[in-house]
Structure formats: C-alpha cells, structure tokens
Length: 152
Image (tube, rainbow, N blue to C red; front, top):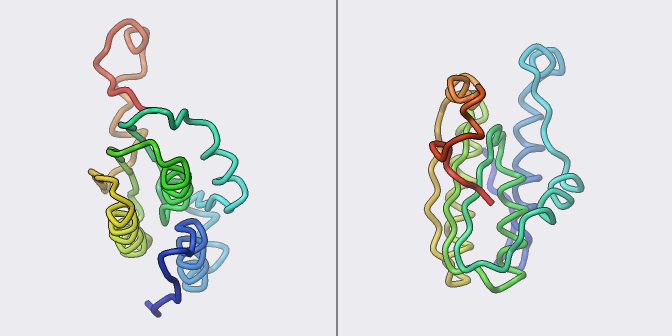
C-alpha cells in the first residue's frame, strides 16, 4: 500500500476515502458485484454522521459493514469538531479478508487522531459477518430485553 499524504488538519473521511480508492484499484467490478460490495461515498458518510447526538461525553458506535472505515471516520471527524465527547467505543464488523488490511490501517489512524484531540477510543474489529453473528437475536425478544448492546 502506497503511503497517503495528510496532516492533523486533514479530515479522517478524506484520508479513508483515499484509502478506499487505493483498495478499489486492486479490484475489478465483477468481484465487487459478486461479493455485494458497495463502499459508502464520503457524502453519504457525512450525512449519516449527522444522525447521532454528540452531546454526550461517552459515545458507543457500531459499524456493521465497515469496509475501509469511512463511516467511522466521518463520525470521528464529527466527534472532533463537536468537542464534547471524551471517550468513544467503536465496534466494527468486516469479513472481507482483502479489505481488512486497509481497515486496520485506517483504525490505527483514527485512534491516533482521536488521541491527538484528547479523546480516548476503544476500537474493536470483529472479522466476522455482522448479520450471521447476530441472526440469533432477530426474533420477538429483540425488543423485549436488554441483551443487545446499545449504540448511539
């Protein structure tokens, strides 16, 4: 992987988008279609990052199909900009072995960037399919009890 050029003022979303472009250069369209891979465009990630409430000092984020981590990066850009959150827990799921090295590199960058802004991050990558791992929870009892972790 070629090193990307950035500094502390470069938004994480832009850096991860560049990483995504590098990853996509390695693939062909047929393999992406076969695997059902669709990477979130930066504009959609920015829109989705507007949805959580950032007024808390602690946030818990779930990225169930992390890809290269652009949604997580966009949320972290927003956390940095809002200056209210001091701790964040992020659980990411990704099962494509080809994209995981890109995601791991981006996770490390996200941790470093958050630390630079005084935000403690606990980030866990599950190298599994989110739906397959959680299918047993999808029944009537899903909404009747608190066994499912709460995410912002």
